Image 1 (tube, rainbow, N blue to C red):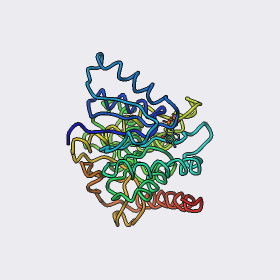
Image 2 (tube, protein in one colour):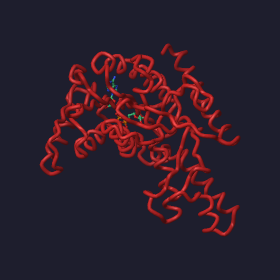
Image 3 (cartoon, rainbow, N blue to C red):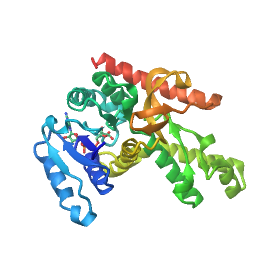
Image 4 (spheres, rainbow, N blue to C red):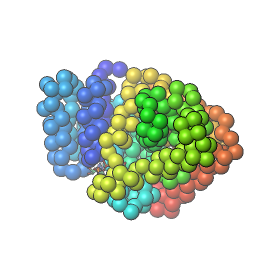
Length: 321
Ligand code: APR
């Protein structure tokens, strides 16, 4: 690959941060597409004019013409509307499905070989729609949810235990909604289970469990917590960081294992649906899904989450998508 070409579909709050992160991390040349007249060109110019300061030579342009995304290696989709206080991600379904089906047609036409990372909500439905409408191999269409949900889970654990978040692994699987599945049993600090560390801290198993339950509840509601504070939109710095980590793994063919929304083909007993799982990301997208044993409780939570994803996909079908 020469210089990778990264197309951002949607130049709003997340799109703008994505653009800046991609060029400042020197991951490739960036094109920001948006339907709002001139706005993406304004954002691109603003970011480009800091190139001397941030020390990048990457090209960055904004456009209202899909032709400019031609031949993109990576496409990150944030087109659509974000939620407002009181809304769930699922409330965005009808509006964003209409937008995303149009976006997918254009990706299929202009960037037929791209790996596509979808961020628009409701994520599990939107990523399903992009794969269906493009007809791309499922491994090349993935969704961003788990990297952020897991980062939120890890951050809350690190703050509680007073350790560096870099040493915390805390996977969140399942759908990207209220039924997401934080895997307590696998949450650890340098391999030591978090529950054991909390029990030692509080010298009380009941208290330790309560603290962990509160962390899990905060993780499930973390997006909503930000929406309630912002009042005008939803989280945008952290989703952008999460998608850039995924894109970097693809661009550099790293085979990094990250929690992503990928289409299952029998893993965890599920076929044909997208859900949050651990996958190795490389130049082919989600190249390998890591399957492992879930205990009865985890399996029940995962299936419950999958039921929510299935319902969302059915609702989308009823809307004609
Ligand atoms: N094609 C391209 N861009 C579009 C289209 C379209 N058909 N329709 C809307 N957009 C653009 C808007 O013009 C806007 O600039 O999508 C952008 C969305 O940006 P914001 O409203 O700032 O939303 P953001 O916070 O970036 O979130 C985008 O990601 O996390 C999800 O729930 C969130 O669905 C939302 C999406």
